[in-house]
Image 1 (cartoon, rainbow, N blue to C red):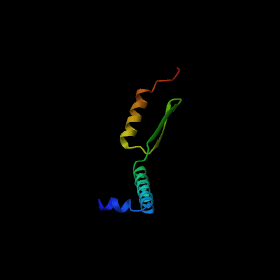
Image 2: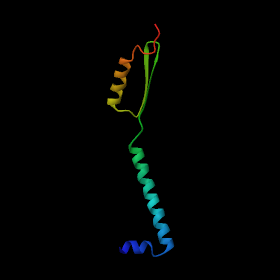
Image 3: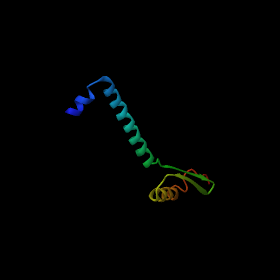
Image 4: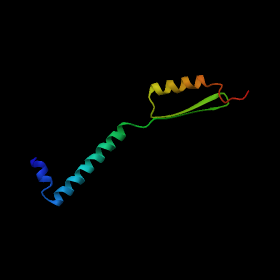
Length: 79
């Protein structure tokens, strides 16, 4: 309770506290964003070869895309 009284004791203390909370929140959000990299997997077929571009993927993602490529080996191919 005493802390809340101190924060609301003057306008400038209150504004400084809000700026401090905003800076800490932004730092935490940046750390979380850096720790959780987005995964991007692109797979496309040219003639009979599959081309796979992988950014930030895990081993399970790689095996999953290869299994899907095997299942779709004849999809979109005119013979």
